Length: 256
Image (tube, rainbow, N blue to C red; front, side, top):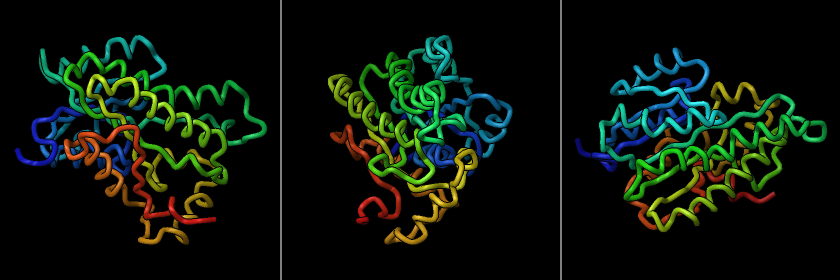
């Protein structure tokens, strides 16, 4: 099969519905020639159903990134699907969660904040390190962020967690560069996904894009962000690492 990911093997996390960026990244990766393995958490039967909607049904591994046993066994489970001795060429990190308390900046408890940071930021490091044994010749790690330079309305400690994610990506890029592992992020605009439903005031946040995206932004179209992820997984960016690529209709460049 031809395509910019021909022959590559990619692990995609965070697929929950076919309206997610992760699903579209997995779909486009397959269309570009990659073999894809998914991870899911919680509603595994739902993830398995969604996996059947890909061009080629992908295997699904249960992964709770706060569970060290899951992380310790991840490489072996991926190998079971890819075959003994098979290597992993790329990882898509699309994992984020904040308890409801994390969306009240002044009143949030450390318990809520700590959960948001562990799941949304620290997990980029723990996921990458769990998969590193399968990447002896290097590869590409791509995560998803929501521009953390801005104090967005309603986003509160999830914004802080995204800032931590962006910093984590840079430090991973620094420390894994010698192993030829690139680590980059796609900063996407807001998407009406299942995760978005858990963000209080999401509509107010998303409304910024209705007025400020120079080339427009579709809240229901994860395809552009998925294509950004696949581009960074490919060999077209061999010396790009520690970068944040904005796929947000241009909102990031607009002044106050």
